[in-house]
Length: 307
Image 1: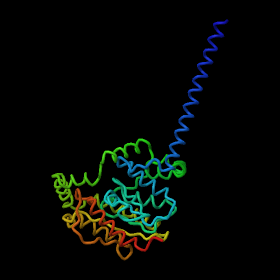
Image 2 (image 1 turned 90 degrees about the horizontal axis):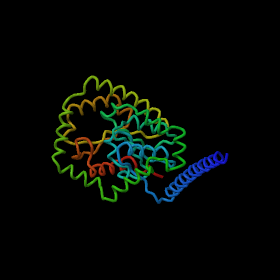
Image 3 (image 1 turned 180 degrees about the horizontal axis):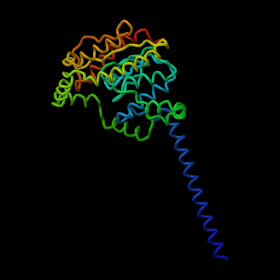
Image 4 (image 1 turned 90 degrees about the vertical axis):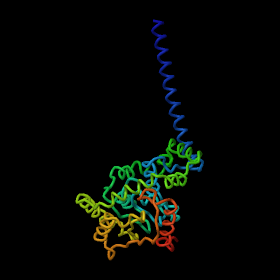
């Protein structure tokens, strides 16, 4: 009898110890979460810009979606427009162009946000063949996740602990976009990339490409109609690329299609300044030229907008 009672007491002690361990673990986890949020609110922890394309895209989208103040300008498009960073243009500017993404996804992000930008710059070129990323949009505007991120910054992508650590580590060791890009510009790789891009663009658009692009162009028209009704100034543009590739067959065909779908008597188009533009790969502007183009956008579209 005594042995049975002793075993019972041991089991109770073990169960109590397990319960205390779980309780302490939960309490420690809760305290860590609260402390992390306080450190974010106190600007002790700097946000990450992302360490891969997916993170960079998510951070961009979330910053735009949860911004409560007025937005002077938003840019939507692909990685071509993503190269023109917001700080190259001005304050209250959000570049939500997505690397590997499309204009349509950016337009959907703008459409679903209640407050609209004063100016919306819309990239139009062959990248519009990529459809809206519905999964990404669903995640961004999921009611529960939206509420959580809007009220607790620690749940945003830019404050994920691992991302913050790795991003700041790259800054600590001195990784810079400029130095990396300069290495590319001075290497045989750039010549190879330019040649490959030239070979691609000398071929005309296939019937399948034209059909797909036409389908997506109609979707863009519908998106623009909805956004334009909010008194947003919508400006269409095709960012400049490598000057030596501008007169290729595919470029000319694409521009003719765009002129037909989005005629200048119904849509406002931004005319690019004449310049011998340089890219890293035949597609994306160099950092220096992206800064020059950003200053041009500011002078053409933002001067007099703020305030």
